[in-house]
Amino acid sequence: RANRLPSKAPLFSLRFGYFTSKLGPVCTSFGKRHEFQAINTNGLKVTGSFYDNKKGANNKVCVIYLHSMNGSRLEVLAVLLGLVYVQEMLRIGVTFCNFDFSGCGNSEGNAISFGANEKNDVYAVVELLR
View 1 (cartoon, rainbow, N blue to C red):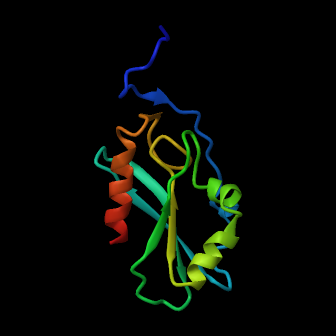
View 2: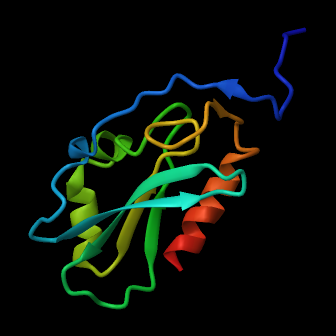
């Protein structure tokens, strides 16, 4: 029988911080990146980026990218073909958001919980976007 972690056991993350300049330019021909911080129910700051188009349209659709375990919002640059994917969404009127889960990237926290607490990060970001 294999040893398994309890389903809600926290795991100390291998945090890889970064400079926001690695996320690409703030303003481009297709839109603008806005940095934000949301506070989750544990009182931790969750950092993220929101991309909107230059038209300033009242966008009702927003794609939120959730990174992998021990990842960060930098993943979008590699996984989704960089800003080309974001640019195409903005062109058709869809906004885009990505963030670092608590315990990852530039967000606060020291541990990940395999979804037990990360859902609170998603709730905090969605509430901020509303």
